[in-house]
Image 1 (cartoon, rainbow, N blue to C red):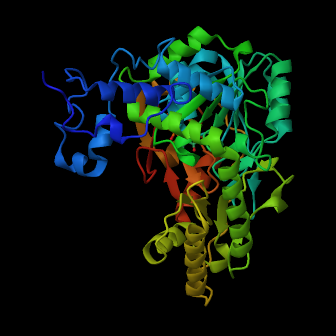
Image 2 (cartoon, rainbow, N blue to C red):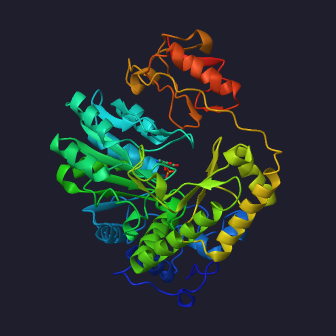
Length: 501
Ligand SMILES: Cc1ncc(COP(=O)(O)O)c(C=O)c1O
């Protein structure tokens, strides 16, 4: 009898995991230990048929873990089995009624939660600085967005979060709305008063959906803002891969049952996800959750301590400013995630994007993102004194390079166009209408079929379905003259725009 063991280590060489603690990992190990000859997917069969480059970088153990839906491992959507058990352990850690593993990132979770709660033509209240996955979900569902505006910090020129009063007004003006979406926190770490927004929304019969892509660590420290599930929200999606230890694309959806039709939610999860889940991604979710159960408070506490020290040091470096607690209670800042270091480089007279490039080239550090004025660094459970030291050294060198006045002063931001945009069609209706491409300068009055955004401040100027105003055209053109990048439209020069014919 042929035994399939030549391409991965004997199970005996590996630590084994307990089924009551890591049910999925235990089941995967159990299957590998059987050493049966695979006549099933994936075609590389434990790496034996994989290209040398994959063998070199992933190695035999990782390739052997790339398993398939075989009896005992179960399907992502099965009602029982190790994946389900692992999801239940996750739910109990986060205080949710149900948790679901996501293999298409938070994007997939946002699609599923909006599809499950808001139908075609129904209204959902959403911040205007939504991630594109929310717009994707609106296009898929046919829902009609009612936008609430985040506050903009004039000095930093970044969008913060949305004040409670704006949600209150939108709820009062749209009593028929089905759901409210809250971003907890924004990319730059600002949170809204999610507990009050949730209570208010529930009083008015609205379901509360939370984009917590950047907050999967909130549950593990009192010093961090409250997580959506604890605040009473109904559905919360977290990018476990962004901040915690899961692999890229691995996210979690948490649910409180009371207002959610669970079979419908599960149908929508199946609609937007693969029927061939990657078991390495799933195992990474289980591992990340186990890690947080075992030592989440310690790890998040350490990231916070490192961030606090780094923030103080950065604020001593000439020309740099890293905002912190002094912004609390200011416009759009109910709470802050201190592990996000947003370094404002305006004082050096250079753009954030140039600082990012310089830091990579000369300081050997790569930021998460930059905009015209700021560079964002994420401090996570992977960081330690040494990594923070390297970051501080790089920032000190950047400052020394530019404080002699060689940098040119960043231009002030053009005034935002009139906040009132008119939605004439739902994003879905706009996208599926007959479209034509016209000159952007001459497009006033037409219905936009694209999203047009600029950083800063990261708030889309036009969404599909909105009427293009003369003010929006003037604003975009002013930004372009100042060298800002316009994101979203198919024509990156924005000489032309796609509109409804
Ligand atoms: C606020 C926000 N929501 C959702 C997403 C989508 O998350 P994912 O990349 O896990 O699909 C992102 C990604 O950057 C994001 O920044």
